[in-house]
Length: 255
Image (tube, rainbow, N blue to C red):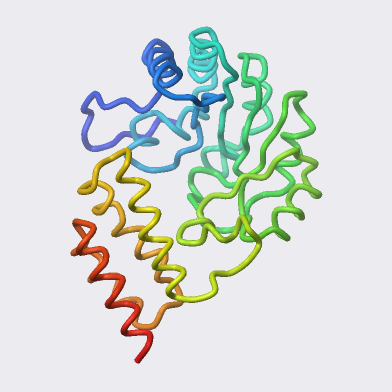
């Protein structure tokens, strides 16, 4: 199967060249206080997978192995690898890929129970994740369809994995980790403000507020007139416009 290509072949790299990845890992380790460096070989997005990186590395296990080995050799902390069930329904190789990761020096792995072709649709394959857990001796994290504490417990029990990762279900819903629902629209809006201000400490006000537009759309789930407010979220560009937006949503919900 030929590897997918993007329309543009600009030399933008996300992680498929061993030396490039090793240097990136060294920089990340030096600049951060992270205890672990993770290599994402499961990203399905076209600009990444279409550039022979991310989930496309599952089509090239030998290159993936060289990347992992290079990163492991470059840093003084554990390296983990995330990957998917496979690239598509004709290329399901998660068990073999898991063994390769272990042999290449990964300290732990994470398996998302969908193929790249599925993106985030359909149901995660529990049997595929369980097979990965049984195939290796290193710790395994499982990912897919965790929407609350109960679903996380079911996933761990079925697969035998030691850890469950939560992804898209947390968007606009950090209360998931506390096992509860937000108490009000006001609580949602206050969390949006807090999240944006935290982000601004690293990225600056302008970037944090522009990024808040998509987060606002997630926090608006279930809110009155959500579709209209999602459109208005595109005007957020500063703390003052964010506050005005939140005040508008609050007032609308009180009518």
